[in-house]
Image (tube, rainbow, N blue to C red; front, side):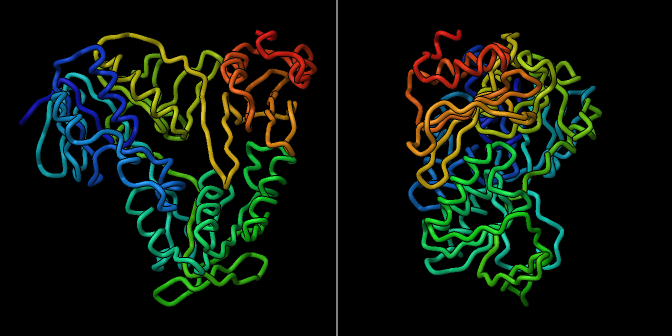
Length: 410
């Protein structure tokens, strides 16, 4: 049996950032990272964009190189699975038969890509995108002139479809919603995104489910519920993730109804020596007065560091406003806040001029903002305003008026 002051289970961005946070508070305590993957901890956004497109190498995906870990007394065990946590003895058992003792443990296990249970979903050429290997396989299949069906119209589906179209692939994207990104985009923005796909030769089939995947040994077509069979050489499912929280469930940690791990304001779980960060963590957000769980890069980035600091004794609350970004063709946007529940928006600027922000209100209270090409001096104010609880009646007119500086509303 071996031991470590800090053990981190997971190989994503949150795990890498936790090492940074620990070292800010504790320069010496030994750290052990346990990851199922065969890579050093890495971030996922490039997998659907720059890395998938072939514009970026692995060094833009991997967070820290070997030297970083070696110089900081951090050991990384790749290709291993944590099978059991013994909370009483503070031990982690691996599939290799090894057992490690810990003083503080971080769960940063993230999620796995969901594969729709369709007939033919296991055919060669049918992909999901979550890992480096997934991106490598899709890129190899996505030769210029190939035909692809992308299933799903949320961020991952849109990003993959846009990247493939730019690689010269003939893309058809089918999704359940009326327009791309409907969950977070007002109708005029959704229509604008749809026009971008059309301009790049991609076909959108809205409000339509895939019925089955056809082929013998290899995908040859995706049959839609409207009866159409869309020929393809590859198909990519971008339909969300399932959380990797079985380890936490088996350890009897508190979970939400949707299998996220319940943490307090410091990201500590129901066990005082176990912490959680990233996709799997449901934290009490002080701005919205309820628990949030967010599957975006910035949450892993920020929570990973904060969890690491708190594991080492900092005792600091996590209070960051949720943030995320996306790139679809030449359209780059940023979002601050939580867009799970909104019913109307206020636009500031012009979508036609590629300089607009949408301010989202739910129950008459400002809950978030989405920005495209807005001036840099507005960005800081956007984040701060989302946390202020502004009401529609008090703020809508000023937000829409570009002659009113956002800082005036602070």
